[in-house]
Each structure stands twice: as C-alpha cells, then as structure tokens.
Amino acid sequence: MPKKTPGQYFLSKGILPGKLTDHLERLYPREREVLLARASGETLRAIGKRLDLTPEGVRQVEYRALRKLKGENTKEQVQGRRFRLAVEQRTGEPLERVVERLSRAEREVVLAYANGASLADLAPTLGMSVIEVTILRDQVVARLLGEERGSRAGKWVELKAAVAAALAESPLTYEELEARFPMSRRRLMRLMQELVAEGRADISDEYPFRFVGKEESDTVKA
Image (cartoon, rainbow, N blue to C red):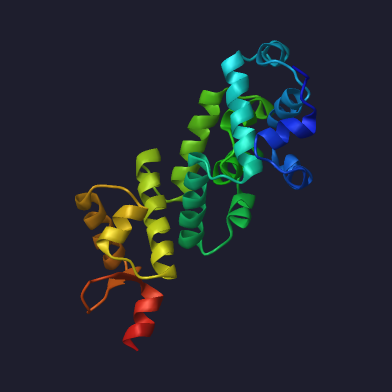
C-alpha cells in the first residue's frame, strides 16, 4: 500500500490544509513534533523511542494535537474556560493582567491551565515533574479564586461562574440547566441558591420559572 503524503494524512484526519498554517503554531513543541512525524509516516514506536515515550503516550499526544487542530473542545479546555471566567468575575480584570503579579512558573502554569493545555508537556520546560506542576497549579488556582480548600472548592467556584455566564446570555429553567450542566437536582438547587443569595442571579415571576442573570433580571423588572 502506498505511503500517505503529509497532506493525505491530515485530510484523512478531517483537517483541511488551510487550517494547518493557522493552528500548528498553537500546539506545544512536542505535540507539533509528534504530529509532523506521524504525517511523515513514522511509527508510534519509532517516535516514542526518540522522545522517551511509550507508543500509547505518543498516540495520546497525537490525539490531543489533532483535537486542537480541529477546534474541538476537550475536557481540559472546558475546565480552563470556567476557571478564566471565575477569576475574571472575581477580580474584574483579564486573567492575563492578573497573572502579571505571579512568578514565571506560576504564570505559565495558570495560563496553560486556562488554555486547556497539557501540564505534562509544560513540566519539562519548567524543570519540574508533572506532580510538582499539578500541585503548583492547585495552589495558585485556589489562591486566585480566594479558596483555601484547594481544587474541589476551586472547581465549585468555576462552575458557579460558568452558570452565571450562561444565565447572562439567556434565561434557563431547572431542566435546561441540568441538560447544560449535568449534576444532581440537589446540587443544582444549592448552586442556584448561592447565586441568588450572592446577587448574581434571580428567578422570574412567570411559569415556567426561569433563572436569569442579575443584570437581565434588573432590566426585566424595570
């Protein structure tokens, strides 16, 4: 069977040539190296031997890079956007300005997290292990969110920020919120009670009852 050309490789993965120029530079160096090597026909084993990775590790890097090129939202990207929203709502400043007050390592870790990037790829550039980078991320994220309990509390704040942002776009019923943010009804009720108590959301007077962003609810009542 004839060997695929790089162009054929990317087309077989559902990526148009026009996207390569725009998006390749957004990848981490290791992601870019793995992807270009795969496009050139190198095997997972050969790439792994050169980069000190297992074949499965190479496959995961390739998969992550392809998703980035396709513009698909990974779990990490969703979490990163929620974190960014939470920090910017809390501080009233863009995240890029907030991190100027951090050390270089803290700044790079936070921005990588906010952008949904891989901490495993970032760790070697900082001279740290993946565990050290993960601990640093949790510490800085908790500090920026004003939480001392760490990752779990920080994620709750991020989730509340994401729900508040969604309500600012359009009113949503309990059922619509559950569909958009899967969780138990009890947990959702607690979250909405907190948002209403904090003045970040309100509930409509008409049935079916909908939650609305605070700015929108003020406009409606006016």
